[in-house]
Length: 579
Image (cartoon, rainbow, N blue to C red; front, side, top):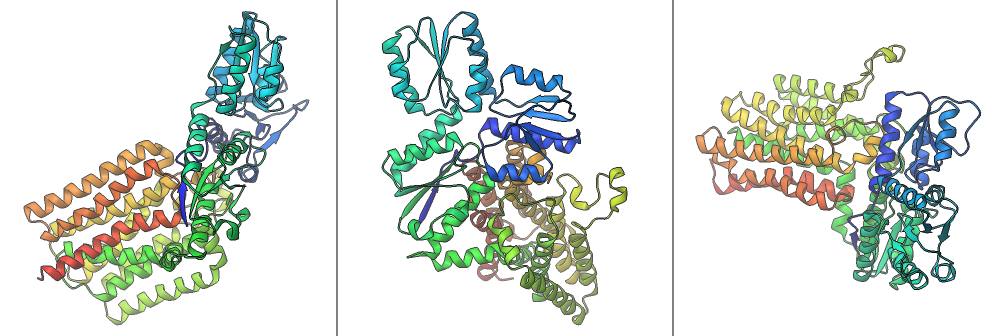
């Protein structure tokens, strides 16, 4: 089964801004943080916010303190005044598109116009719009209501920003018949229009559609309605657990989209579940099932480390690296990554991604395997009397395990914002790159007698650059979840656009360094074919900009695949051009 993901699936701009604003206020420690009404029409996201101490209130208490965030839908002005009057610090997170509609309605009302709002009468956004329209205001939800409406000129028509574009056009045409001079404002936000248009286009190309989002989310329900209107079987689900494998496995091509209030991690979880259904259903691919197991167990990343170690050795002129050093690299990445994934997290997982769920299900065997292979690598180095590499490996393991360990006692925590290495902003990917640099370059370099420094420096740049970019590629995909859990990765600090620019520049820099080293003789000619590895990551960075919701398996296969490619190219070069 092929799964096609809509590019616009997930949080819209307004919801994302409100979500990020609430999390930012929480990190600033501005007392209790509340939202006026549910911030997002998504149960999983709300439960995650509640786990961080963020509550929603429906009515203003007599006396209160703390910060109240006005959600993206907006509220009537009297509500904001009441909240401020009762002692709250009010932060307005109303969507800019909704604010624009509010301002237009206020201008029309001041000019004595009849304001017609196309939308759901009980929707929070419509209530906020209606409160600004004065007495001459009508709300219509259906074409029949529009045909029966008595509209006195002058008049204007606006839509709830998440309203159906197709229905809005029909309502506008019906009202023009009754009031030819009515002003029709195109207030449906661009994100909603694109989402609906893409859902329709995707529905025409596939055999069935899956729409992800809350059942009380207006924009999500409209996406499902549009897909059904195209005559395609449509499955509206809130989480991956609601998917029907038996029903879905009958279709050859399935489209996937999500509402504007659906978190990316939920959409990705459904995407991965659909791919799993396709792999295990009739005609499922055994290779995909194997790839899924290797990617989620971290064995694939560990194999990629072996490949990278071999490539780095060739750059340093080590034609036949010791198998013990290659094995040590595999053991280090598998063990340290597994131990960190099994360590207590920063907070509750909103909807456990497939990789997290995999580790939870197999925690015991994975932990035992990690400890055993780590001890095995130590024993192998000790037996071979490779004391220098053994010491380096012990340091690397120490840093890797200490990354998630609390170094500052809890009683001192109020005085120390950084209690663990992982609390250092954007530190994760730097520590990953340093750890891989040690096991892929330093260990074999020391173990084989510390060769020429220019070749060693070239290998360092190559290894650190590739692993740092690879780690940030994964972080770009996980931005929304990392922000919710308080992980300050580089993409969160810089933003997705700036991070892609930095990583693209870094991959080009690594490629330039390889080319220069090969041209001036600092590195063996094998550096030329190894240029394909950073260029592969660059291509993925450009592609991921268009498809940011790639599943965890696909992302791992491609990102770590660049390292695997480096090893295969080095091996092929050694076979064709023996030393």
